[in-house]
Length: 334
Ligand SMILES: [Zn+2]
Image 1 (cartoon, rainbow, N blue to C red):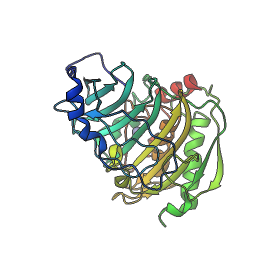
Image 2 (cartoon, rainbow, N blue to C red):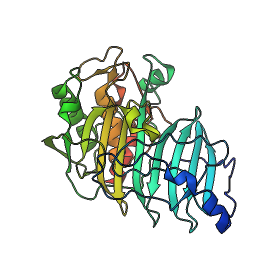
Image 3 (cartoon, helix red, strand yellow):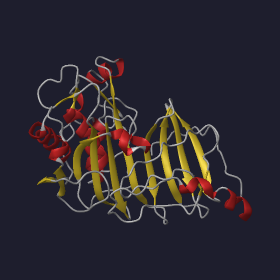
Image 4 (tube, rainbow, N blue to C red):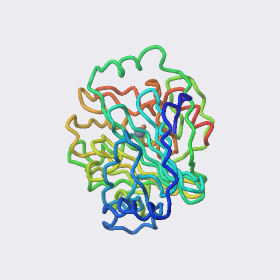
């Protein structure tokens, strides 16, 4: 989770008495789990308390296997709220001091990414999204020109330890436009962008990342042992995915990545272009480059010259190639 030194507010959940703990358990039992769940038990806190004042609640998660129901302060634990340049970072810890969950929340109160940690404080699940800016938006324009090659630190709490990383396409989920074969081409290109470290900044590929496409699947998002790329409604996923262009769920054990699934929103009003010039539509390959960065364990950065900036600009293909920070990060991690 990127953070800035300025620590504006520290909301400390008061030390609660045993009686108070009993009184606040209510929050922990909201629905949302269930579904066609085949995964293992998601990370949980025994019970949680409400978030500190001023921190918006995370929308309820949809029925995704392997996703916790809750984003709240573990009973007896702490919440730290840090102001960052464009929003806040929230860190929730258990009573024993281990991390339970973290989130980045933008200035409009939207959750841009959420991470959950297991009982020993190791990252267990990371959920991150990407959104679209309108064609020609100033942020998008500035990234195309000079200043597009700044190094930005991008650390990670998880990485893959064996290569190649296998993946499948849920072809049936792909809308007729752009169609499964174009989507597959765009997805393979996005994977190759990282595997070959194709960047705009002259950084040499020193990483050992490889991906292997294993064919189509009917499996989708959720912990089921298969890394998938598919389409669907991001709203249906709930949580940090509501309204997103795409959302990625990456699970890990002991800091080793075990599965990563990507869903692209099938209903996004701007529509997608796969291959060629996108016109005013969203370039699918750029979206999948960003999401594949999450699959590899990278987090969001604020610099628009890197693909891990959490927005793609409709009509632009600039994020088909990595920026300097992205390229150095994948070299360092792998
Ligand atoms: Zn993202």
